[in-house]
Amino acid sequence: MVNLTEQHISEIELLVEARGVEMKELSYDLVDHICCMIEDKMESGKNYASALEESMSSFGKKGIRQIQEETTFLLTKNILAMRKTMHITGITSAILLLLATIFKIQHWPGAGVMYVLGAASLCLIFMPIFLTVRVKEKISKPRLWINIIGTLSAFVLCFGILFKIMHWPGANILMSSGGLLIIFIYLPLYIFNYYKNKELRTNTVITTVVAIAGASMLFSLVSLRSSHVVRTSILNIQYYINDDIESSNNTNNNLIALMEKDSISNDVNFQKANEMAQTINATSAELNIAIAKSLHQDLTGEEIQHILKEDFTLISDAKGDLTSLRKKENGLADLVILVDDYQTTYEKITGTKASLALNHDNLNYYIKNENTGFPLGIVIHDISLLNLQIQRLHTGLLQYYKGKVS
Image (cartoon, rainbow, N blue to C red; front, side, top):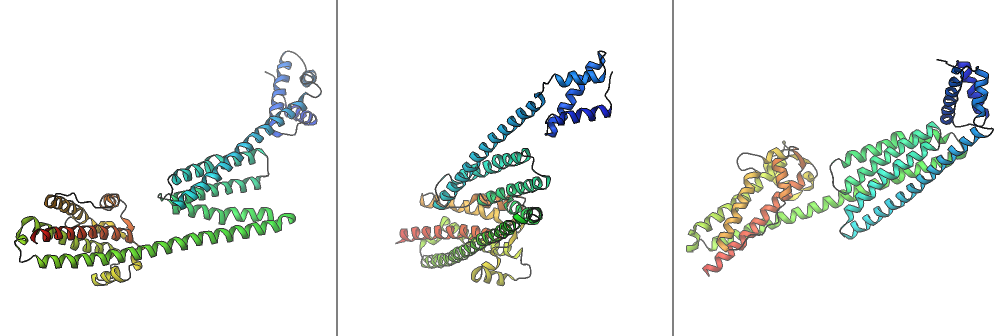
């Protein structure tokens, strides 16, 4: 078998380059093809010079140059098609995200679907196509790495924002990772690469300053607004619930006192309903103190009661230990069972089904989920709301009994 020497291969490379081939990948393929042609001819008895001349002549005078022109045209055509797809996808994603934001503000249905579709098309179609086009354009390696890291950062940050909007787990990790990639890797590489060019220096500085300042102000605004709204809402709602529970208990105690001398007070169902309502009230208060105390071991029960009643935001943002609610006796599971029993008794007495708006998903999560850390404000809110609804329902039941006595 005939094998060409390194000198022969170098000579063929020079001839191919002299014919106008500038693309490295195409040059490698042509040299390899010509070497194979020459080796075949030499095996049939021809010398290297004759085989080389015949092989090069088979392409014609402009054949090799024409191959490069056709290859360039096909690549350019491919890039243009990809750019067109990229533009269409980018515009579609932007429109979907804009509409999703409008629908979200107006509380119209479909906002979540549009957010998911917009973010998916942006991250999974637009960004990969953009990166592919940049690779095919044969830009320098530093600029290519800048584009790769920038695209990756935008990908992570975009999904982080989507997860945040949709309240999916992992949103904070994704947003933090994307932000760190942009600040500590992408921007330094961007500044280092473009700041060296005097013509681009001013634009580089301005772009960097605007990007950092804009992102900082945006995240600060979102964080401050979100935290302020959440804290204010939790504060007001929880205080109203506490006041309503106290008011309902006072009303119930007054009604019970009025009926103590009546024969109805000896009714078994009446006594059973009273005992259950009072147990639910006491157990709810104990569980609220238990979940709060799980994070604040240094505070006494009285101090926690004061915080729950007077300064709830001191602990509302912290995470408590859900295992404190999972006691074998008088735990949250027992409380939920007792609430079901009360509803059954209420229906048996009045003939009317009790209607309670309970957050069963959250309650099941508190009882069964392996993740034991959860925001105190939400847990205490759910337990307090459950208690409030029972106490209000019991007020109606007592008024029903009082009406029968009257």
